[in-house]
Length: 367
Image (tube, one colour):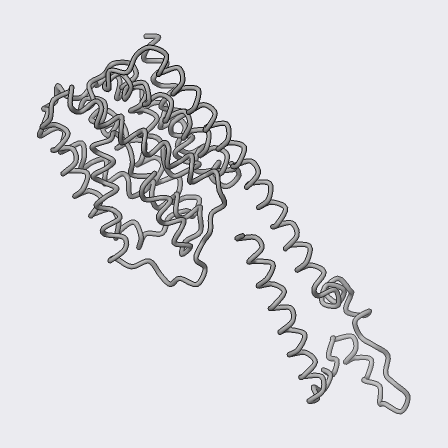
């Protein structure tokens, strides 16, 4: 009973991380199951069966919060399902001894990728156009295969690729990837069912992970708006790297003082990555504050007019001008100023200068 409770808490924590980052539910859960001695194929099969329920709940929650782009979901989910089915079939056909280092190597690589990815600022390509099927289909195929063979990887492969493209809002990237994973998890589960049979699924483990994930799914869809993904990604990446390094060292027959040195180096790299992530997060926040302050002060006249009352915004008539009737003044019918060539030229010059300043500030944020 205690073990199932721990697994439920792991499922809850993994879903919170997955909802905030758009990745790491499978990585976190599979890493724990491998650490506990579960066979690689059974671990991946159980995690994917649990993900059918958690991704369905996550998809509904993200949809309710407006975080889903259904066109992207439709173009990436089907290729992802094909890749996941192929990966599940492949993992089911190899022995446990051969699968353990293979799966640990994939998880270790993805964890290291998270460390590197979230220790530096995201540089988005704002000039890019819409996402097309020729980009989404191969991405889904590769991500689905890695996800099934590694026990996780759909999010770590798909989410960064979509974020770096700069063509979607981060919250919609996370929501769309989480929603499409429902189809991927279903296809992987079918592949494992064909390759391993029903005995390949650890049903108590599946139930515990599912319960924890279902509790966390709606909370995670809300947390995606406020949690700093930069720091969370670096922290989770370090956990995945350290836990899977143990399996790789054991498979390689490394003993003596070497594992201690390896763990020390990996821990130091983890601390450096977290420090870089914190610095990048602070720089991004300072840059955004600078941009907001500059854009606010760029048009003080407009802000003053917007805050002024209608009566204060109307200037008194100059000498010799006819004054509008009182009824017209009460109804707000005031003559608009006549635009001249000089005023038009001045306005265009001001707008050009403000646009140039805005572009410089935006470049500073991305840099």
